[in-house]
Amino acid sequence: MIPLRKRAKKGKYRLKMLEEFDEKKYHRRSLVETVFSVEKRVFGDVNYSRGNRLRNKESKLRNICYNIYRYVRFFTLEILKDFYIAIFSF
Image (cartoon, rainbow, N blue to C red; front, side):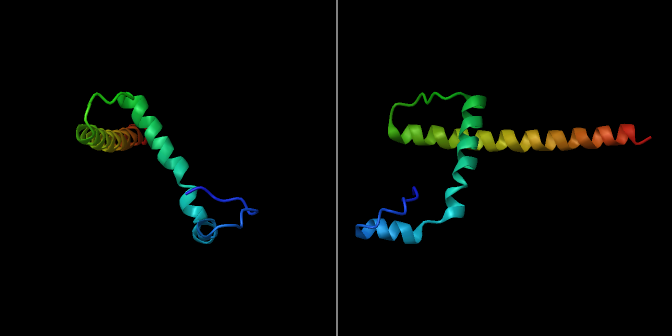
């Protein structure tokens, strides 16, 4: 949902949007866009499926692969960090 300008005060649904707009929730959009950008950079931006059902499956599988990628990368960095701390602590 996009925030309305303060001067837009006509219409039942515009007033409802003004009342129900959540500022914190709206500003999390940049985090989601960042994840989409990284996912496209890592796995490519082409969806090879033709039908809607298979497109959705491919997108879900790409998201699962991205989560596995992040998980492995995070724990690899944690192990390396612990390894370097152990080497240089002597």
